[in-house]
Length: 84
Image (tube, rainbow, N blue to C red; front, top):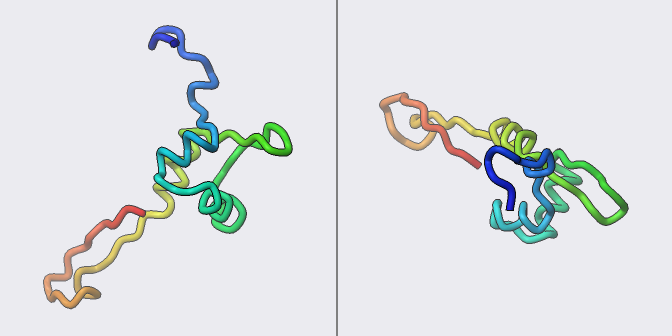
């Protein structure tokens, strides 16, 4: 197991199985996100894909939705951030 001093460049990447566990999604959901929702990935081979942690965080951040409380039947007009 690598120490913090000797991290491999590949430590920044997740396998599809690791990504599934991280997001709590099945492989079919990851396939849909990749094919239809723009989930960034690196195609290593016909069946092997890697996911950059940095790219994944940026992609997740880009999917944040801000709702106005007024839209939720309150009259204060404060914003609420809902993370997807």
